Structure formats: C-alpha cells, structure tokens
Image 1 (tube, rainbow, N blue to C red):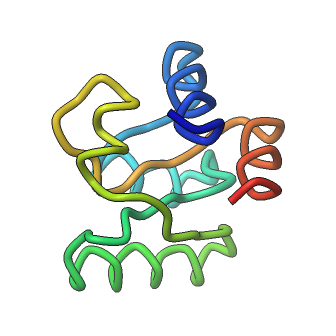
Image 2: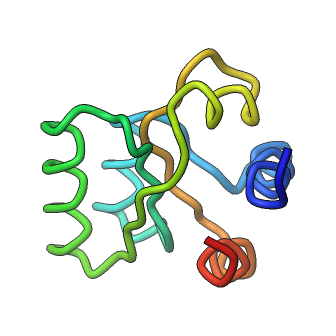
Length: 97
C-alpha cells in the first residue's frame, strides 16, 4: 500500500475525512472541505456534480485511485468521493498525488 492510501487511513481514524457524496457536498457547502478526492472510476454524473460544487466554492479537487482501493484503505467496500478537512493532511496529499 502506498503513502497516499496510508495517509487516508490515518486521516479517517483521526476524523479528518468525510466519505461519500452527501457528506462531501455538505462539507463543501459549509466551507469545511479543503481538498476533495474523486475516484478515477467514479460515475461521470458524480464527477460533474462534485467538480461544479468545488469550482463554485473554490475548493481544490483531484482525481485519484480506484473506488475499491480507496474503499479498502478507508475500511469500506467502495469509496468514490471524499472530503479532506484538515489543512496539513490536504497539503501532504496535494504534494504527493
């Protein structure tokens, strides 16, 4: 497992990540989100909706990983969208993706 997935697991344990479309949209709208990660194989509609919200609220958005691998690193089956709410973790992820 690489450093990115390990950091995501640590961030989840620390409560610094919101997982799922609804939780991510809530964080973006309420200015809690610093970085949004979308799985490369997420649906086009999900990508469009999340990217639109990120542009509207000036939140950095990146595509990284596959749903199953992201889910495995976060203790779930699949994860297509997540919001990172800690500035230090977000900067680490941005520098290493």
